[in-house]
Length: 84
Image 1 (cartoon, rainbow, N blue to C red):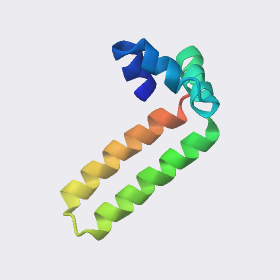
Image 2 (tube, one colour):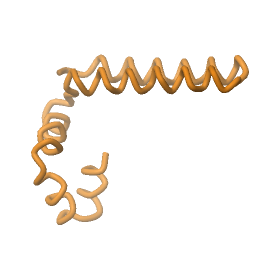
Image 3 (tube, one colour):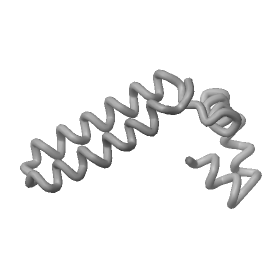
Image 4 (cartoon, one colour):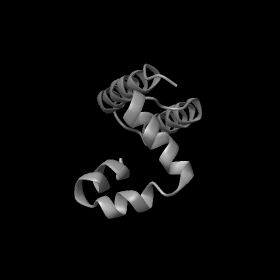
């Protein structure tokens, strides 16, 4: 996301960001194939699950919890339908 913003706003900052190998490879995979690596998918899913659990334990009402669950499920569906 940062690389996309930098590409639009500042090519120099984008080049600096992409000079880091651990950032450049996933960004290039996304730009070329729309791909998300399996470890990133797992971490994203774990983060969404933890977030939903936190919402549940904060005492949110059922409507808020259900809405969050639907949004996060749709996000997970998008992530998991991208190629590796």
